[in-house]
Image 1 (cartoon, rainbow, N blue to C red):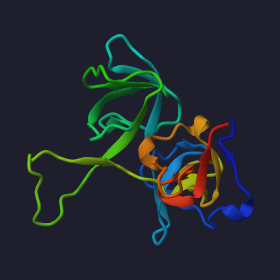
Image 2: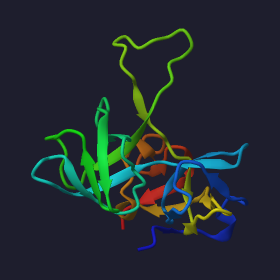
Image 3: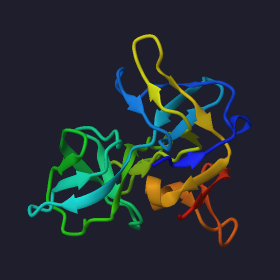
Image 4: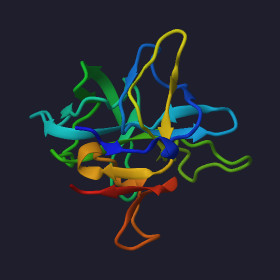
Length: 196
């Protein structure tokens, strides 16, 4: 199902070169990205919708199109604070295996990809442990992009209406407080989410 519909005027006028996906990746409409306007580059914001959880509580069946890879850190969306889990392996397009069992994960949860946060100069974490946070999107891919050696770009929408029950974004990507009753993309208030 198409995640959303956008008039041509609602797209950014240029493409963004993706820097954190495979050279032969297929990027589908509705994929969240974080763009760097000056450099004309973008990274895919990784997340996965959990369809089913294995008996071992670490083998997860997920919706395709997640871009999560072995060694990535993920967390169950909506947790406060987010607890980093390590991805031990990815099997095919719809199975993620965590490095350890987790009794909190259930079908219908969303895993949000995390990246290591750099400590401010001269600062160090109290525990000495690495800290992780999600990469927050400011655009959404609006047309299917098949990357290859010559073309690693995708188009992006800066305004539109997105079907939340199709894309299943993590809570961290959504702004529900600026305009009560509305759900907006955290990095772009002109992208609104509805349930249909």
